[in-house]
Length: 163
Image 1 (cartoon, one colour):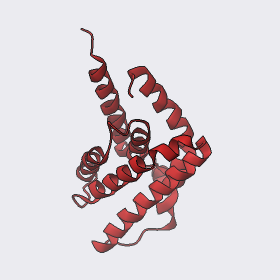
Image 2: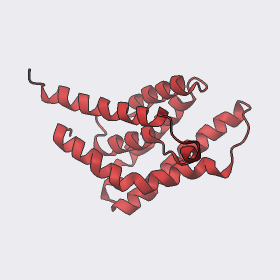
Image 3: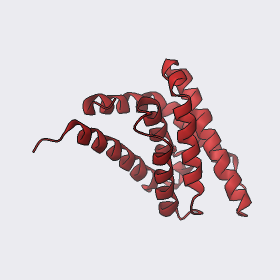
């Protein structure tokens, strides 16, 4: 049985998001937890830049709801934040495509830091304790791994012929 090109493209998109969710919830050593990047945010930003017609605010909302359920967070908090992240990435996609990789990495770090700032604000409004400085390391780690993740996801996009 041969898959149609649209089905192959959808399957590639969904599988990359599923891998990102699995990487986000997969347990690791306790010393490495503060350095875990926001895999879902990184993959969402990539697809919003590479295929803004296919991935947008609705995708960010669904991914955020899934993260809320998986993390046991305040329902809708991650959905709101990922929707905003997708909106900003979609809005900036033409500019970010023109940036060299290192400038893209800095822009991605700023987007992820804004994501974390909004989550921190929502947690503060809900009465949770403030975080330590290690709270901000996932944005920096996301910036460091962005060039490699970009190359991997670009290869997935080319093989699945996602436009």
